[in-house]
Amino acid sequence: MNYTVGQVVYSKAGRDAGKKFIIVNIPDEYYVFISDGDLRKIEKPKRKKIKHLLITEEIIKPLKEKIINNSIITNSEVRKALEALQK
Image 1 (cartoon, rainbow, N blue to C red):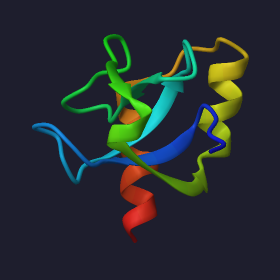
Image 2 (image 1 turned 180 degrees about the vertical axis):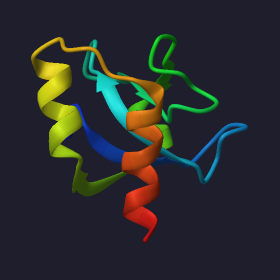
Image 3 (image 1 turned 90 degrees about the vertical axis):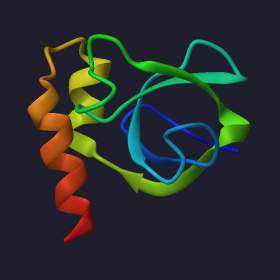
Image 4 (image 1 turned 90 degrees about the horizontal axis):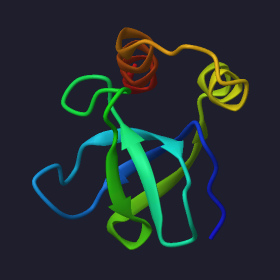
């Protein structure tokens, strides 16, 4: 399964089941770090097993570029990008 930073995922397990996040870091092949800018801030993302995530095809390109370039990302940017996908 292919996944990348900036990709939108849904949690399948845990207290945050059903919530939407973006991938902010991929440390290895089993885990990713996810953030939603609200409960899981960009400064302290949640480490989650990939098997507990539903990976979508949607990638938020502006956030992906910022993550790759190590630019500063605010929690409001993450929240706005995820909210825009619902509309």
